[in-house]
Image (cartoon, rainbow, N blue to C red; front, side, top):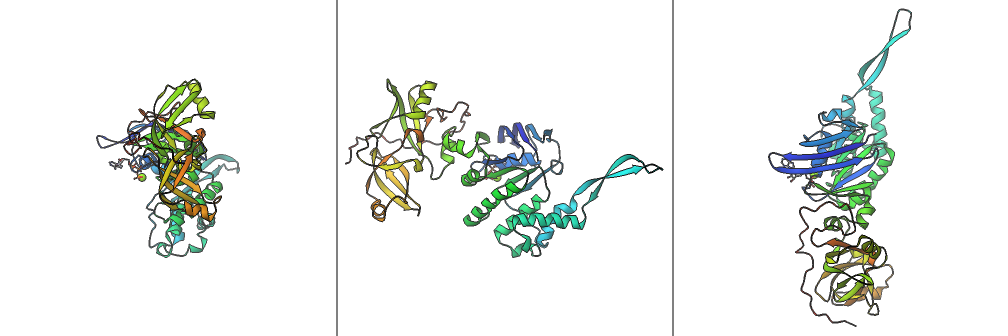
Length: 424
Ligand SMILES: Nc1ncnc2c1ncn2[C@@H]1O[C@H](COP(=O)(O)OP(=O)(O)OP(=O)(O)O)[C@@H](O)[C@H]1O
Ligand SMILES: [Mg+2]
């Protein structure tokens, strides 16, 4: 039960490998925070600095209000689960889980009495746990993690998911205030990962601990986190709830990282006239209405080159009667069961992905949505995200951090505007 705070934390390996820059974050007691970002962005380094496994080059780490910069890992009241959970192969599961408890010492108060039998003072001594106490704690953890029936086995007799649960159990019995997990599920296959994900959600409801969880998988981040910290090149890009990051990404990188399939992007020009803001997309004028339009007016955003982002699930199929619909041709169709992922080409040569739920469609309609078919696509203003073409920062987010290493925009659609023909 502890708050964790990082103030201006920096990590430099050797002379010039800057792994983490000016990391500032306050994690509330019992909060589940997920660090997410691409490989090499500094997630593990940050976690290891909190655990005390890595020196801090600069800044302060506090756990439970106490500065821990110079404390050894064992004195920080944290427990950690790694990606490569090393279980002792020759020990039973019981012994693997109980191992930290055999090292643990608990304080006991011993009253010192005078000749008359009155308590003079209380001496605090430390003692080891009894076999009975250890067994009880192992059994409690095993029940939560559903590994009770395997306690007599050796690790080689367990599946990957079961071994992972043993590793979590071993960390759990330490009963630390802060639980640090570094990609604990990445060795598991997709199905087991999904199962363990829901186990973790249940687990966090049953243990009163602050969780800091590292992953490069945005689905894990979205499903587990109270708050997500998204990192790139050692710098925090945004901190927020999964919904905040999804609905209002601070910059183009966050927009592209969160959400699957990836957000579609177009280079366009954000313009303004007496009626308000608008863009021209593939020859179709789209007015920015509702909240987005109001927000632009309030902030008095200057007309500028913009990168428009629209998520594949937020595009719908429309028809030629819709004046704002963009006529496209399907290039690839992927049948996903509950949805179709249509890769479509716009009249100006941009490639987009559109996710179409199959539920409302009948078999004939689904059969028609194949490569070469013309479709009309449409999306509302409220699902449009506008990023500055120059800085890649969301035009409607005030405190977005400056993007140092921008997302490569060659892959963004930047084709010369072809003359387009309305397809009817
Ligand atoms: N011991 C080390 N010595 C030198 N550089 C290191 C060391 N450990 C990590 N780095 C570098 O620091 C940066 C951050 O590494 P880190 O392991 O924190 O990344 P990560 O976000 O956890 O990535 P991954 O998802 O691949 O685990 C990387 O560029 C990495 O090469
Ligand atoms: Mg890592």
